[in-house]
Length: 371
Image 1 (cartoon, rainbow, N blue to C red):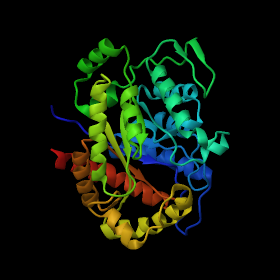
Image 2: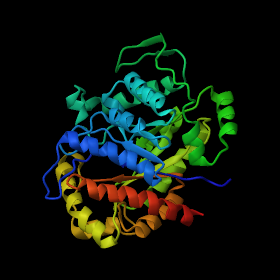
Image 3: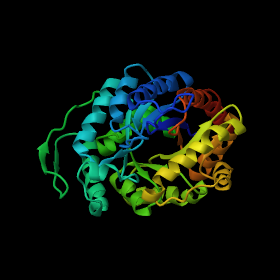
């Protein structure tokens, strides 16, 4: 079977700056993200995702609202979270918000669910980090039940029980058909019929994993697709997670599901310009989150390693970035790659250039390299 690949852009609503370095307001940054999402479709990008954050430098707590604004101005690009922190949210409300987005967009919505590698939402919404694992496991299980369609009965410790509960809205479009077929190369009609006969439902939801094998197994057990968030070190080490996911799907009697790779990067006309724009901002943002996340402060030498062929950063000219994406998609058995673009302090013009180069030069070149 010939695989069909998909390529997306993700943002955390990174707070942008004016050309003189003055930070833009949160409101202007959010408006700019909407423009970038619309421009992504015009540039040929397949997916645009917005990740949930609650900080001054990532002021994007309600990405689904911004995605709805993008949906109203686009026709083809798929839209979704990248990622939604399910542990500190209500699975029913997340399901309803993204079902509403699915309705507005005509069936183009997706959701990536995560435990919360950034933990600012836990104290904000009154959750205890001591419950970190239990919160996600229970809520992911409930979300999987919601995706089946029909009334839901569920009981756990982290929220009120549901008894034969109808959860609205019911979207008219079969969720998942476009994205899964696009990502795997399966004939749409054949795949939809097979899924409905086998499971009575179709899914378009992913679990984001940053390196925890148990999270990979959970995704397979619950029937989610797998999103690998690779932000440091050699991407090749994640090949074991792709293989674990495939084996776990077989063990749990689940059909094959796609693997997505999400990694940070920046595209400019030349390698030198891309590094000059990205590296100072990268150092600043890692320094901001280093204590909370346990990161080392990067040096220029460590940055160069990460931006090189064996690192996790996709920073450079369209040719440099395309070659690295193609190599790692092959190595990891993935059928989708999402570039997390932008950093606090970059300008809107710089980000629009990245969007344009990624859509019009990087993606066509990667498709050519993958054959």
